[in-house]
Each structure stands twice: as C-alpha cells, then as structure tokens.
Image: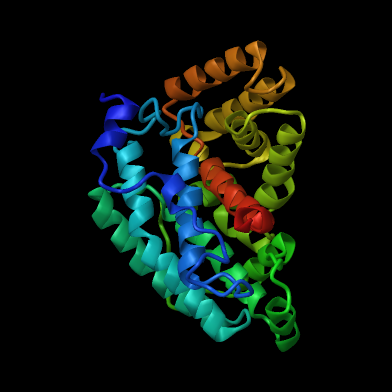
Length: 325
C-alpha cells in the first residue's frame, strides 16, 4: 500500500484546507448569508477532514484503508469532491422552498439519489459516502432554511454581519425534513437498513429524525471539552469520534460483525476515553487495542464517522465569526 503522503501527492484535487471558504469572502457582501456554493464547500471540507483524521480505529485514514478493501484516502477524497454539486443543489432547493415539507423532502431525496450515482461513478462503484449524503445533506438543507426561514430572520441577518446559523435550530429543521416520508423511494435493502431491521435499532434515519443527537449532544460537547482541556485539534477530533462511538448503535458495525462488533466498538471507545483519551499513553494503547479487535472482526464504525463529519460541519457553523475574521 502506498504511503499517505504518496497518495496525497498523486491527487489532482486540493487539500481540504484549500477548500475552506468562510462566509463573507470577497465574492459576497460582508452582510450576505452563506451562499449555496459555500455551504457545499463546508460540507466537502467536513467530509475530507473526517477522512484525513488519523488515527481512527479500523477506518480509512492517512495510514491506510482500515477494515475496508474497496476504499482508501484517495477514493474518499474523490467521492467528497464529486458530491459538491449535490450539496449545492440541496441548499438551493431548501432555500427556494423556505420551510420543511413533504415536497421538499421528495425533491431533496431525488437530488440525493442522483448524488449517490455521481459518488459511485467517482469511486468506481465503492460506497464511500452514501450515509453522509443523507446526514450532511439534511444539515446543509437545514442551514439554508435557517438562514432564510422568515422575513424577520432575513431582516436580522441582513442587518447583522456577525450572524451565524444556530446549530440547534439547524438540526431541528433538518429533523423536520427527515420526518416526512420519501414518497417516491423504492423499498430500501441497504446494508444499514437490513442491520436496522435485524437488530431493531434506529439507524441513520432515526438519528436524523431525532435531530442528530450524536452530533449535537455528544460529538460537539466532546470536541469543545477536549479543546478546553488544551488538546490539539487532531486529538480533540479523535476523542469526539470515540465519544460518538461509545453510545451509537452503529449499523455499519452491526452489518459487518453483528452485536459482537457493536459491543467491541462501544466498549473499546469507552476504554480509550476512560484512560484519558487518545492523547495519553494509556489512551493510545487502548485505541490500538480497539483497532486490533475491530480489524479482527472486519468491522468498521462508518456510522460514527459520518456523525463525526456532521459534528465538524456544525462546528464550522458555530465558529463562522472566527472563520470570517
């Protein structure tokens, strides 16, 4: 396997840091809300930042493919970039409709399915981000609705150059969209859906309908607490991932290794955090042990990875002022 550095050098696309384009960039007036294109770039940045985060237990990162035979960092990056038009279209459609509705749900679902095809084409048939299209796509739509939801809100935004989206309201609006049925969807028989039915867990659909609690109430607080303790950004993000893993009924783990895989992921993540987190010697040893156990089970916490990307996306919204300055 090629080194992560060699893989990155071969890529034609710029690194995630080049993609970061905060609201209020020179192409917009200082008081303009986030454009659809900028929301899409934020979404892509979150996906790439999640993919590049290292080390992650049994997931694709800069070291290699983890438990995945058909994915690597280059494929994850290509997949993310291929989804930029999809996220922009989701934002544009939500902004045009203005409020959650069955019609908006149907239109977003159609855009998402087309985005899946773009992703599969970019990856040569590998599912790199199907779950993320659902999760991040709904949040992108939620931001677009929150930023233009009512005349009063629009007037407030126009008069406030420091306006930033309220993350809790974004999640609430995204949840309202998710609660409408997708009237035109064919019956799903995805790996995640089969695991959800077999093990009677909520899965990505329930996570969205509940307002993304593992991003808003688990991932973000863990990320902020780690930063407050003085951890560097990489360690803070790894610990946020572990916090999500410790309580999430991850259908990716369930699909690959059943309850044994889910329990290994949850218990192993808690052991790392109880040992002081990934930045301590004991925590790193526990993280290594968790990865060995998951690899032996051929299990990968892909659902937690998608929710970490959601956490990073929400974190960007929460720090919009700092990004602008």
